[in-house]
Image 1 (cartoon, rainbow, N blue to C red):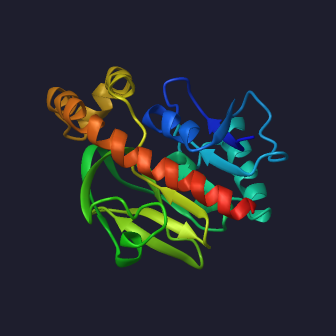
Image 2: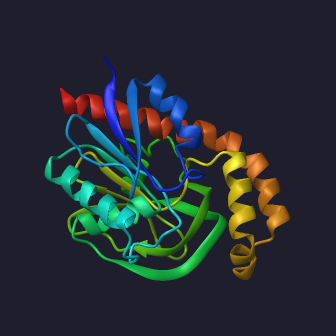
Length: 231
């Protein structure tokens, strides 16, 4: 039997992307539920993945509130968690940390691992410095007793709480089709922040295959951690 993971999704075009196949190959059974529509009970799950969304952590929506509450429950149960972008911001809040409006980052931005990030159990396969897709106007402060794993020029990009809870602000998951849909939906916003959409689309064609490997490694190592915690 596989490892049952609760996957909290916010919108149809913001799914697991390149992470899905590696997660399944590593032994995860993915219970994908939509925040604000489906129940997000933790019972019978051994880990949680909280995906990105168009919302900000300050938005008073049923989806945002439900995700934050589910993550708080998972923390109380000491389950492995992986939060991505909005999922990482809400994870930080669930852990008692703060989020704040930041200089928006859209498109591919340089990210640097900290010394701890370089030896982190799930980020260890990443280069010391890499470019990752970004789409956010909010970010998280480092929660109390958390460890900073990566930074961009502007904000915290990854953190770990304890031994098995991770938040990453950058996006390891998007496929080319996902980024194309985001360009269609948020192109004017991206252009307003200085993004050349033609260049972004071309970079996605080059970099998504790279991230299929890098993101797949993160996914596989997360499932391995879930398995170790479960034992």
